Length: 474
Image (cartoon, rainbow, N blue to C red):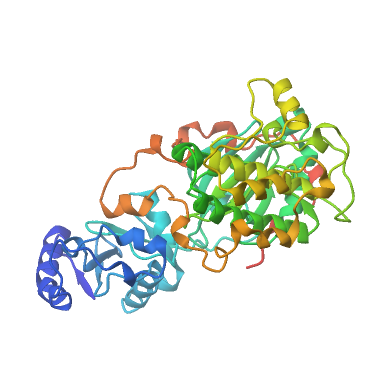
């Protein structure tokens, strides 16, 4: 441990120089420009993270600020340690000092780069390059329940809808990042969507699955409803599909299996999703998809019961929905087939310039497959998208289809989506080009533009939302 009043730059120069021979002796078999071996990482994500990392830019001292511009240095002998190790080591070393705060209240770190802060909050990830960066410990605030807006630091705007705005926020009590959706009550009532909003919350609090977006909390003010969700920095599947134009069959296969896992979980909970499309699938930090937006989802008592409501996006709408003949859980498998086609072809199968033409295609035409589709893929999509709901391939039998055989057991993670290379940007000390990134990180948040989207004014009572408060049990 190092503690000093000497200027930071001089200390770092001295410390790095003194430790450099020791570090090189550990790696004496490697040249300065030799890349670190890929097999030391335990996942494809971590391999990609360190693929461009060379010995000459591996840091060996991490600086953590304490008080009065003083700092401690944490020696990094192994470049393949996690962010969780850094947090625990910081707590251990600061606990040896006589400071005016409890080190066990440290829940994370702050830097001058919010994307780096997010990476450091993911305790299972390997440490990024922290060369030249001073870390400031983030202390638990000791806020009392119930949860309210004061619990969160609002960082940036990451999305907007007709009556809601979504922000990237950080919980002051645990240091974790979330997506906070703020719904304007007045606009919601004017659009007649209050029942959909309440229904979505009721569905989400009953779900707990790795392929489903998690609702961590919900609370309200006089004019706003607040939802705290997982933050998925990879953005929408729509973004990745448009960026790559189309996916190869193996990548589509990998995504298909993950999404199918989420759909089948919903069905086990007697929920029909009804709105499966690339815009409603979010990609987490490690490239895995999560189903989001449950406003159109339908809880059912019996899996075979028919529902006669009309909803969804036309490109993915099944014939029985358009004709109001009644739909059930087989609707989700039809949409899964349409999504699979789009992932490999780059466009939905029945897309047309006008709604009338699209409806005609859905009701009367068979799917036209490009010549680069494999026979097994054509067969799977054809069986998922049968116009007769009683003839569709459904349930666990999907995983037995020849197109998926031999792939499920291997599940090669190399087909995970590239989630904007956030870690590589840190590693190479590059600046973020937000215009080229996923939708969810394009628009920066300005505190001066906060106004009506988060602040509160007297308008509406709580009476319609008396049971709205929710906090997920940890």
